[in-house]
Length: 365
Image (cartoon, rainbow, N blue to C red; front, top):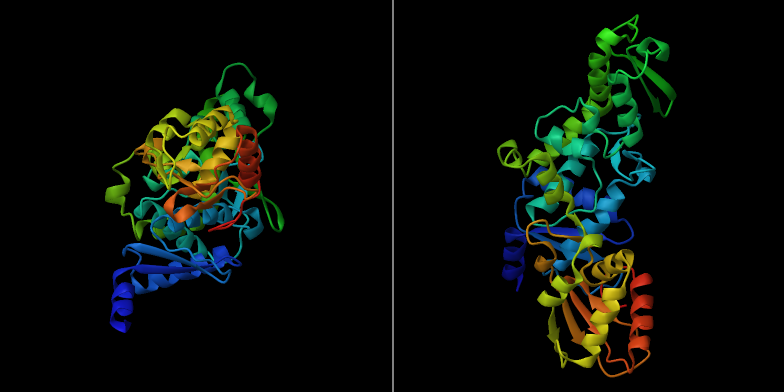
């Protein structure tokens, strides 16, 4: 038994994760993997400290990266800021804690990709451009995170305004923890913005936003990413492809009929069972938000794989006894919905909605 346990530890990267300190325990585990050079091993996740009985057959990894991705970008930790309009995350220009943490985060994001999982981060396209060695310098490069700024910079490039009336100089200003910081982009004194240099102004402004002011943070993130995914592999993709591979596709757009086609059934249910017919009638009436909650309730992840789409999702509906007042439950590590055989479609819909709207954590509700 002891030999088998030692062999298991040798074969796999065991990531022990605390529900009460999710991000801290994950970053500690990844940091240890970096130091021991074991991140390349197949991953096994173990949650502890909350009485959970989950065995990692792949589903725990999906749940882990769904949750840790949200935590990484939480403004509470001060490493990233979230644009209020687009909800995309970017490096906090005023961050003043350990830069090394970004290396661990880069390895954590890469660890998800390396193990065939998506991670629930919402980085803009320019993150993936920069991982590919490109430097954003056009308004189009930032409009998926800062659309208003991109529109303003486009107007600077147009011939519809008198540039000199704007009164701008070659300065870049941002907010740090100590207040407003102004960076001369071309030394001091900063030249004025005129028609002859407007293209250079726009390019340099975007370069300061996307890299110059956050260079130590991004460089550390990329070092961590490259520990698992070297440049020669990263550069096999375009920025959009790399973004989809990392973050997945928006599950709100998935085809319910395709999910129905690939779903399996167990313990007395079949595709033609009346309860199953009710189930799909209900789900097809769901709003996009409802569908997202259902997918996350069963699989622990609200995104779909980029390669196979919704057809690559493990989704099983298992009969969980006759009609009762028990809510539907799930085993996320197996992508399994435990659905009692309710006596009516109305009751099934009520119980299903209650379950998906109030579910948290892993295992049986």
